[in-house]
Image (cartoon, rainbow, N blue to C red; front, side, top):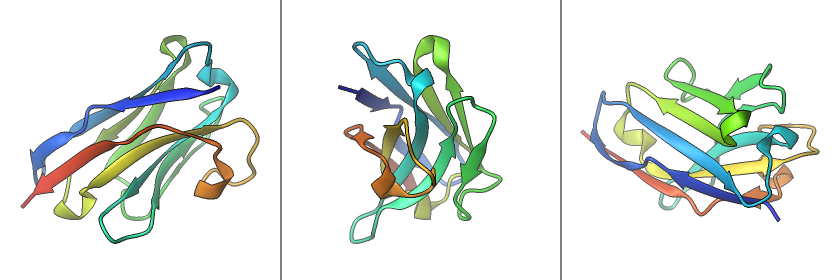
Length: 125
């Protein structure tokens, strides 16, 4: 069983930065998994934010966050990060970490089998 725990969310002002963390607990070794961040705002569908391959060599970003967000992974710490800079009110959402070992498109949410509980990010204008 893969257990993922997100942290680092909070209330910030537009233009600020936040760094989210997704830690795998128990006997989970994230080096085995492709990892991603998705987000969901109230009344909206879940949106792809960023993904990183198992090796860390390949990353993907949603169009709305390119150039502002950076995904990274530290397999030794069993943790994936999302550095969010130049935050905008439209970035307000619950951010979810996801993991899966065998997927063809890292940007597609239904391909991921394992999810964290989410962390709230609120950006005020």
